[in-house]
Length: 386
Image 1 (cartoon, rainbow, N blue to C red):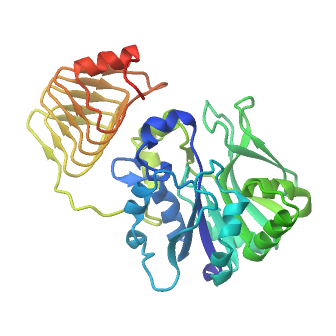
Image 2 (image 1 turned 60 degrees about the horizontal axis):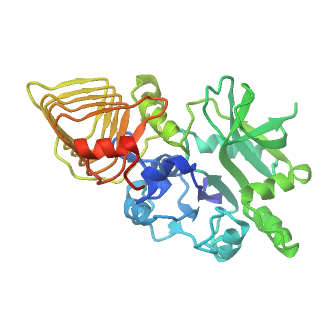
Image 3 (image 1 turned 180 degrees about the horizontal axis):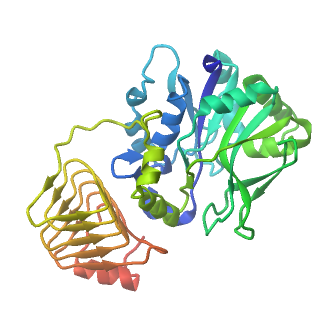
């Protein structure tokens, strides 16, 4: 069964407030959990289900970081002679529309050349650890045209803003799509995981093209709801959407919860990432670390609480880091105090700096700008250009 499936990772654009973190990287290559990237979860879900043909399609803005991370797909065992991982053609590189049917049309040769009969589409901004083999089995059990994976959420609490929600009838058939605007509490949240046969997808796209109707893949599914047998698959595990700064911060803080971490990073379905050779972290005598994820190559001489540190972060003596996300190669100098901030790669926080923000509105220090007391005052006043 498994060799009948190929996977498409559909890159979507996040909300505008993420610009500070994606100026120099693709959204899918955002660092999470200290040593992983956002796309690692989607790729790992795919290869853990023994799928060996993977295409990446959609928003390739600032894609150098993404291609550098994936390279030939070695960490996911996708550097094979047959199949493997492919960056697919975007119809119009200047278009802001993601996952346009024109992008799918531009890659018809890839679809026709592939030997697989079914396609799984996955959006990497929806983070979970899911057994796709069970989704495939249910999809094939009653001759569905399309399967959409969803999670029933009883209390949104501000989460999953602007993601798709679905409505189902008593036969588990999907009758409607909608957009979550947080007006209701009980929702069936789409994981943006779809299964469809390759022949059916080509047939539907061909009909749209013939009628000169170009939308997105989701528009295609919505427009054909009455004509297709589209059913849902219920997912009951941990789910997080990462399309905003707040969601990015909350997800990283969730990883400090041992139960969530055990579910996401379980031995049965591991999460793989690009390997980097780094020395062990050094904890000096006066260091204090509580409930934190510390990556390799760090030097901890100060205090770190409820925080996530990427590789090669240095925290000097007297510095305090609380509820923060510090990306790799940052240096937090002596007697600085950071609370609820996100600091991008290769920043130096000067001695004695005090950076305070709220978990509800975490402040972001962009990559390589460095922070002195003067710079911080400029940021507070809004003097610094974006």
